Image 1 (cartoon, one colour):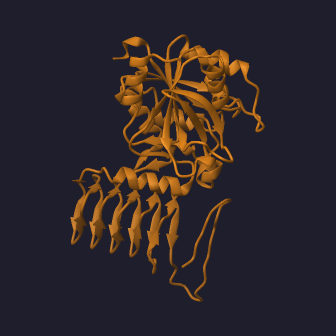
Image 2 (cartoon, rainbow, N blue to C red):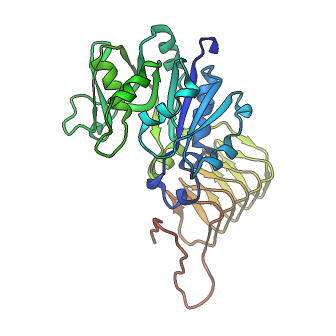
Image 3 (cartoon, rainbow, N blue to C red):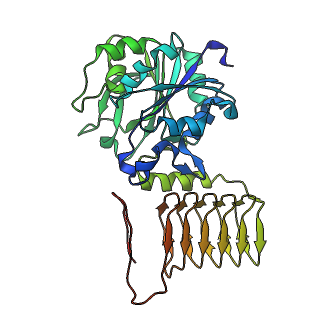
Length: 359
């Protein structure tokens, strides 16, 4: 299937400022959704579409962590080449940075913090069948003024507008594109935008202006950009909705309801887990309730507490809470607990850009 030389390019160099404080210490593309790094969903969807040669654009600051997580790609059945983008100068700049890796091959560009429920198979098939110069993925949104939007002329794209004040269409650009090598000349021809970046929308517009064929592909099923905490929780909910039940841990006076994954080495004692939910290997849940749409990472401790619609990363612990914890994203090795000591007072050790709400 990959005989036509189609390559993949995943952009994984962004700073993740909207996900601080998590992204001070970790790449935003490695924040887990349903206990799997967001980045891996992109790699897997490329592999499923028959793309076996993948380049990943990395930043100097987070590149080593991404290399360590994804490796050479063999676990996904692909070969990964890493390309360093020295500064975040825009998506079109990232594409130019990978020109040597991509060569003359047609390729798919995938933003590393995006999630598409139905993958990219239909997009790749349309590109192979129709052979346009570029193919862009579009989805109807309720707030097109917050996105790059495409105006269509019949079956082709006539104009791209970045965050229009008065949108003439509700079709937003999803973070997945397919290009031929014609995009390189387009990226070289454009000027940086007001924010100092070479915008991919400008490069695609350059193709349109020069009468090259840019086709739209309307995506069915959901699409998520996981750039903010609320988006990650929503993506977690959407992915958990497709969960298949699997219970491999130990249950002691405990119950699981609905679609729940309990990984090996998990111990539930006097606990109720109501799905869809996933509990990572080695975690212990004691005298606790874990509600729907919760993803608990590896080696997490939850004791005498209730939580739902939340993500807890590896090594964290939640103990002795009186109220239910919900809509929360807890980083690695974070300890949340109520102290029995008097006088009763709140004590916090909190990093930059944290968000705490007290009941």
